[in-house]
Length: 156
Image (tube, rainbow, N blue to C red):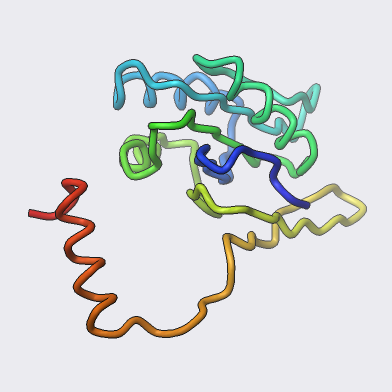
């Protein structure tokens, strides 16, 4: 199943274990990055089994809800970050959310989710994140990578 998103939007897909995730993720994100614009949707896997959601940007909330509903796997979540907001800035805060048990991806690439279905329900087997490598970096590529990371402020 392909995740429908604009090219400049980052998505984080993961798994959690409790309905409290929705409020805890919201608090973690707005505390980690003031002014963050995001949408978050979580697949409740017992009780009413609803798509529980939150966010600060309707343009990100709607695709998060659609993605969670399309995946339909219990205890999984979709987080959409508006353009200009990046996973590298929120993953440490998300890792501190005690309900989150893991991540499948955090990317702006095209993403496909591999879902299995049994008599019990659905589960994510994995994700396909972007394209297949076209080669191995050489000296020029290494120099470009190092310069780029310093230019954008991620390395000194």
